[in-house]
Image (cartoon, rainbow, N blue to C red):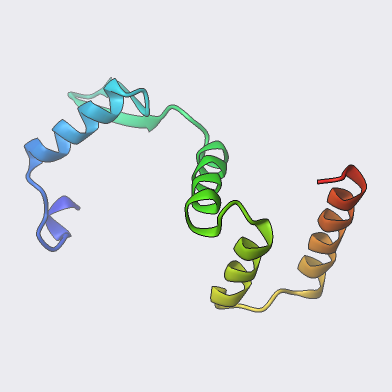
Length: 99
């Protein structure tokens, strides 16, 4: 798989990067048949929320409105009626909670 990449990194570069990520607490590994199998230490949704929070602050000055407008603008598909209904419900809940 690594070899299929254009300008593929060396095996030792990949191992070094995996080791660094493990030292930082982002990965863990188990030995399986003479090889290491790596797994993330945090759930995808938690990491996704943290990344989105950084994007919101970095590129949209913390504005949810600007972020949502950008997401709707770059989306390659249209929102379904059901998706619009769910979003409207989330907006109404946020309004009631004063967010």
